[in-house]
Every structure is written in C-alpha cells, then in structure tokens.
Length: 294
Length: 47
Image (tube, rainbow over all chains, first blue to last red; front, side):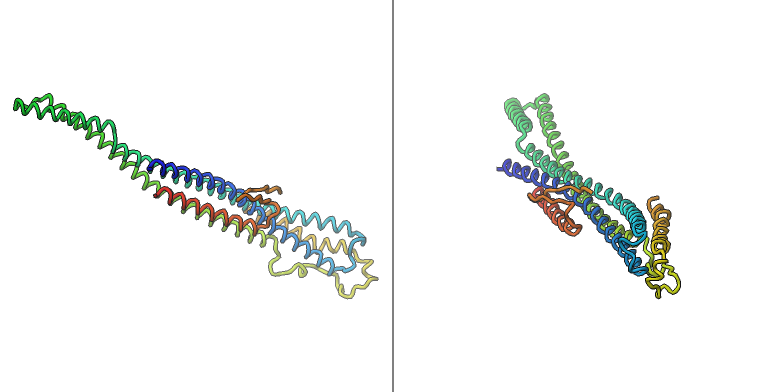
C-alpha cells in the first residue's frame, strides 16, 4: 500500500513538473511579446499624434495646401522622412528598456526552474528518509547480526551454566557483534539526521526562490512603466504647443487667395514646422538617447 | 514583427493579432496556473 501511494506521488509530481515547465516557457514567450507590443502601441500613438499635429499646423498655415498643390509632393516627402526619423528614435529608446526587461525575464525563468528543481529535490530527500527508515526496520544485515548475537549469547550462557567459567573468546565475540550492530544503527541515524537537515535547508531554499521570483516580477512591471513614461515624454515640447513655435509672416491672418499664390507654403512648412522637429530629434539622439544607452 | 503563436489550454494564440491588454489577461491566467501547480506540488510532498 505504501509503495502504491509513493508511486502515485511520483506520477502526480511528474505531471505537475511537465505542466509547470510548459507554463514557464509559454509565459516567458508571451511576456517578451507583451513588452514589445507595449512599446509598439505607445510609439504608434506618439507618432500618430505628431503626424496629426503637423497636418493640423499645415492646415492652419494654408487651408488650401493639399494634394495637387504646388510643391505638395516635396513637403509630403520631407514630412515622411522626418516622421520616420522620429519613430526610429523612439524605437531605439524602447529597445533599450526592452533589453533590460529581457534580462529580467530570463532571470525569472532561471529562478522558476530552480524552484521546480527544489520541489523535486524535496521529494527525493523525503524518499531517501523513508527508504532509510524502512531499511532500519527490516535490515537483513541487522537481523542477521541480531540473530548471531543471540546465538552467541545462548552458547555463552549455556557454557557458563555448565562450567561456571566465562570464556573470554566468547565474550569478545559478543562485544564485537554488538559493536557492529551499534555502528550500523549509528550510521543510519546519522543519515536520517542529514536528510532531515537537508530537507529543512531545501525548504528555506524554496522560500528564497519564491521571494526572488516575486521581486523580479515587480521589477519587470516597474521597468515597463518607466519605458512607457520615457517614450511619452521623449521629444515633447513641454507645455508649449507646436503652434507657438511657428513664426508666421506679418498680417498672415489677412492673407487672401491673391497673396497665397506668391506665398511658398512648402518653404514655410519646412522652416517653421519641420525644422524645429528635426532639431528636437537630433537633440534627443545626441543627448538623452546617448546618455541612456551609455 | 513576427511574435509567433503559443498554445495554452488547447487553444492557439496568435501574438501578432493580440493587443497588449489581451496578452496581460493571458499572462495573469498562466501565472495563476503556475502558482497553483507549485502549491499542489508542495502539498503532495508534505503528505
């Protein structure tokens, strides 16, 4: 009955081990994808906002400047190029943080593998203790020794009865066999104690793993949040909106269709909208991004 | 970017088509499952 329940324990543990191993791998893959997806979504939102700002400002500058207008294609090309550069800077920023999170994910997988190993080690130690205790109970060697001891004792007592003299050789034999039995008993007790200590240490190791895993989980969330904030704050003009940095020609508000034909919208867009953004991107790459990347 | 697919509880999840929110929900379920497995394993041993 005892053997069957141990077998059931082993089967149950094997199932749990396989399931947990699969879950650890799946979780690591999804977490990596999640971190990338967060970067992607945040960057996409920021790029869309920037593009919409540019479009809104171009419209405010000249509502008639659209597809088919003079130099519109050139402006479109410049805007696309600048937005691509803007996006790339944000992707580089996101990649820096994603690299840190990747290290944390790998550390977590290592810790969880350690925890699974500790649990199985605990089972191994438990089995060794049970096995050793059983050995102590029905040890053939011990039984044989005990039988021998008893036989020698009987002979000794019989001889003593007959002749009333204690045979020294018999006494020595008695002492020897008793000593050997004693030694075996001692070594079994030592082993039990050792396994019991190792089991206690193992429980502490398991608790240590669980604590570390919780800390790594918290750190992954923290770095992910820091990344989102960093991307949102990157290359922002702060409280000033894009419009206040635009320098407009005097009396622009009264511009009419007559004047607009003499007004190079594409040039004004480039000077007042695109160039400041380019400067912000360059400044970001040379200062903040290179400081972060080290 | 190809994020790939995963299989969990006999369902296939295409990570490229999932939102971050959906991935987080899936991660929470897997985390709960793992915790349950670890607890069950520890209880099995201590019996």
